[in-house]
Length: 82
Image (cartoon, rainbow, N blue to C red; front, side):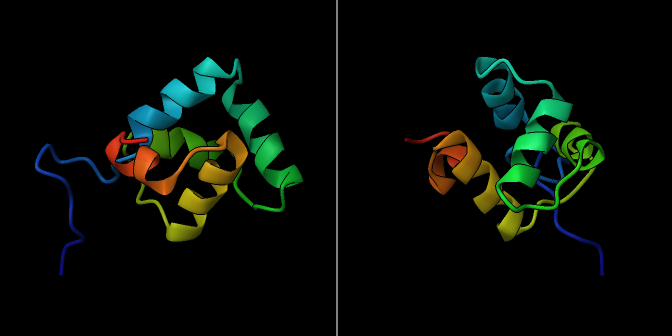
């Protein structure tokens, strides 16, 4: 059974917002990976790259990690709503 994708064919809904948040905070993908690891999340630069390029699905734990590090809500990451 194929995994679901959005109507546009993307594998996740947060890739573009993740890019925007990362740039807003002046972080490279490597910097973000470092912050996530310091916060206790095992997410490396390659995972971030694949999420941002919509080549990877995102788990609920990863959404929680990004929300925690950027101090935003899950709703913001998924829907862009604060």
